Length: 455
Image: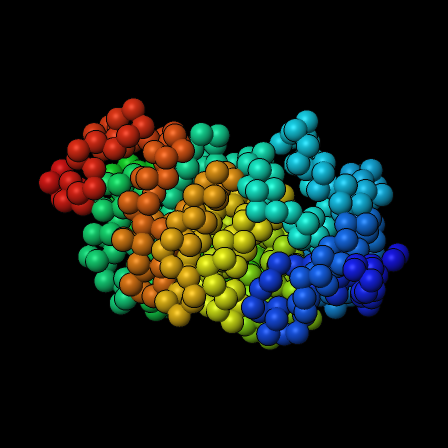
């Protein structure tokens, strides 16, 4: 296995596959801060050349975090389909890229081969792709999932209605739910981030959102995004909810810092299957983002994009209903500016779909990041072209509880019209029955939250 390349008369020698992966990565402030990034563009290209010549077997034989010390590595490796892996292990990473981009390679082809890929292989091929490559390749892959309803069908674009409130006031949350629904947002899920992580508060939000969905016969699912152990206690106390949520990461140590491990998620999955309100089979909701491991000091010298890929490898073990990427949420210490946010979002969306996950995206940014609304809108339009299953729906794109910028109800409507996409079928039929939508377009009644109070 050759880990060196000569460019412009200079030989670049790399000490490990882990170093090759890190230095082949697009420029990210988190990798630079930890001293993992290539020092020059030429060194980055040398690392990419070396990476392109490595075989998939080379990658698998040199995990970035060893099997015997990391649970995430074990979950990913134990899930690999050995028959498919043995068919493709001689492919180079460069050949995998060409195969993915080939006009003759179909969604079914990709989904089959993906079962023989581990996360470092997926990260590696992603590092060799341009932005257009990432959009095109991701657009080939269609992943659907079902909790109460199904999202991700061809020709659809869904939205998570995110009615957060700074102190969990139900009337404020309800007003936002009504407004979002009036704009056609909420077919993916009505998911509330509570300001207070308590069993009682979680139980109340689960019950109230469930009751509203039942009253209006809304074809969607509810979720309250407190810690998963808090949600589990609420469910055991009788709270009605369709989907359980948890943030996950790409190393065992980072997951432990989040207060979870594989056993926790196994228990949660069993619980929601037994006591949840939705038939499934996909009943978990994961949130991820580049840099989360670095933020808690659990990156093991691995670049943030490769760790994000490992997060998806860990997550796919649980066949979740939805995965939401928030790589712009931490701030400039991990992803510095709008250009890095756009690139990270395209990488993450593609890597998640290549893992077989139902990917939604939040091309968000915090107010201390060197990004603006134009950067976010560019990312969102590209991700819509790439086939993201869903985005967020936040009033005016400004989350007043979490204090960051995301896609708003107006953006949701614009994206559907721009790309000729529709809500999930059952949800669209519900909107049409209420007179809020006709022939795939919002009517004059839409956008007025008081519609629900008057009716």
